[in-house]
Length: 272
Image (cartoon, rainbow, N blue to C red; front, side, top):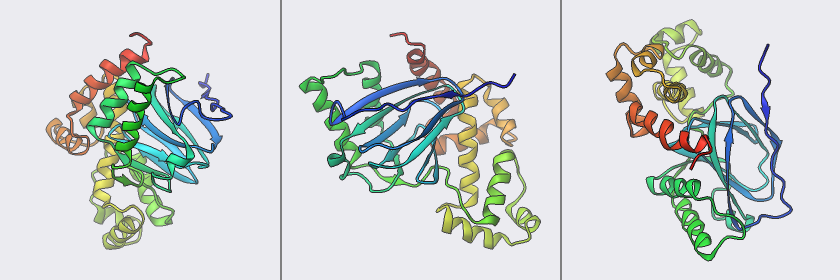
């Protein structure tokens, strides 16, 4: 029997309980979030796994080294393929004007991650105390300073580039040179490179590495061995995979696994 997805109903407020309101969600695998929007901004961070969300027709997929920003009145819906723990900061529309005007990924800093982890371990309850409000105010101040980017794993509407990216999605271990893949698509490597820079903002080799990072994260969280993951993603040696993963995440696969299965798993279980 096919497993039915879990449908998460968006929260409905007449108004925000606080100008910067923290909310945390522990979700089972295969959760769906129906289309909705709200008059306040939303900052979303996943303590584990990859956020997958469609906002204003654009697909965003961001790992835990990034977060996602949705300005007020942004139409969006999302899903998570694996069990996840993520949090949102709902931000009053007046304050939200100080953050980007378009949906985007935000590059997380160690300080913001630690502050969100503190909130996760000690979630504030309304009405917030003056100390709790000062704490969320500091997070907001730090958010105003971080760099923004598009989706960690951007996509394209160009038919030719879409075919190539879809092929990579279905074959993340593919080691065929771009020159050969371009020939099979009836084009040139130079044409694909130009389209990638135009639509993705990154080189195709970078995109392929990011895809492998995204695929590796849930496997690491599920306890699979680094050697097994390396082979599944097309690496002949574990050291090559580890070097690539650390380049993108600033931690090794084992460090990521320990973080995901330790503190985060502890919170997912509902135990303090």
